Length: 276
Image 1 (cartoon, rainbow, N blue to C red):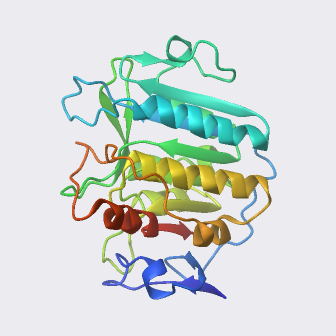
Image 2 (spheres, helix red, strand yellow; image 1 turned 90 degrees about the vertical axis):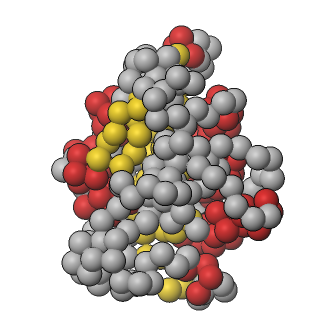
């Protein structure tokens, strides 16, 4: 069964997988959907973007070895779709200095300007960045400059960038970027901003998630996309990923809670598929 879930205030933080465990669920904020969004005019290629802050970044959030792992695993998975571009920073190392032997690497740091420019050249965007943390209420993606220090890409910035996102499918591997406010008319959030900018579909988590969980989800969705499976169906079928501890994709790495396996399952089930 398939469900179109349009939660009102007070229900937006509940994972659909908890409410409709046997269904494929797609979320929206309104019944006035633009179902004619198309990626037909966008270049048929995938952008894998990884924004890894430096160890000395004032806001914290260093991904340790997981930044390189995310780049390698997501890029390898995306190869099955055809052409792949990689926009990657790991602290002060970026571009070809970071990945000298990898094809398709853009020789620029993963800053907001580069991300928006590269996003416009692909129909599938796979983005790994820090989003909202456990105790944070600011909706934005944290890109990085040439020194590896975080630079915010705000929801206001995103919502006006139709040339970057119109018609694209976005797999957003960043903490709590599907989370919204309880405002009935303006739900807010990064995923909603992407939909406002014209994205056809966004997959993102409602809560802070670890890099290992996010990358496992991303790889599964990329594989399903390559096989022609819609992302909402693929997400409903995705199982728990790695059980190896890794940093969370919130501004300061986040905090862990409870049993590791239970925590990971909660993170996996927090991913949602949105249209708008």
